Length: 267
Image (cartoon, rainbow, N blue to C red; front, side, top):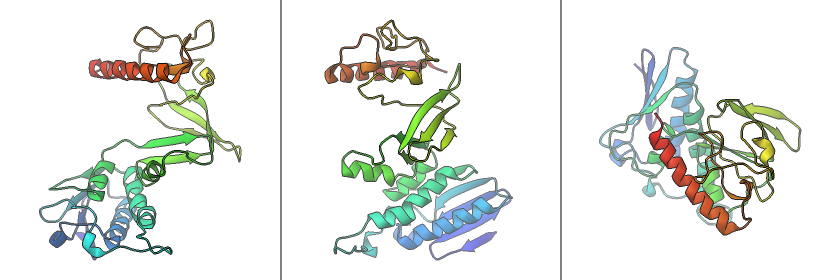
């Protein structure tokens, strides 16, 4: 049964399954601001329906989505330049974030080409979300990389937060974080952690989980495996490490190779 028949999107609900269809087949379901807004409306309706237990995303016709509709023209900012970021922040990013955070399974039924934002939508239905926690109030990196992080619906940025504790004994169950400006504390449900510890050894975060050496660094073997078979360390945090960037880079490469070997051998 068609519940919503919007200008560019259809929402059909059949029992416990909601089917959201990009409905611009004449343009291979190319994205416009209207399509993004219609997608948000359809997903919001499906998410609120208590009878719906799963959401399927697909495209009408022979394509899932050909990406942004270049024929639709650009929106311009106050300086007269094309304003892409506003559309990303107000429409596309919230949509991808909703796909990642809705409490019901979202399945991408990719029925043809999926390009650009269409590919991002399909990936958002399958990729794991990432929470980026950093102490600085501002994310410092190349401007284009920062914008990519902030417009990726799979990434949640927590600026000005500190990582206080890894929670769990034999396996990771979460992390405790705190806001340095307000003092607020939260526990995040995560299944993996990648730590950038900086130049100073911050082994206090893993002191209760990993074996440390006599100098206070993390004890590792020749392949950079720690006392926990699922945890690896590289760089200045390693016991007896030579504090040079080149050493850290080389250890990072070795650790990456060891991790790949471990993952391939794990059930």
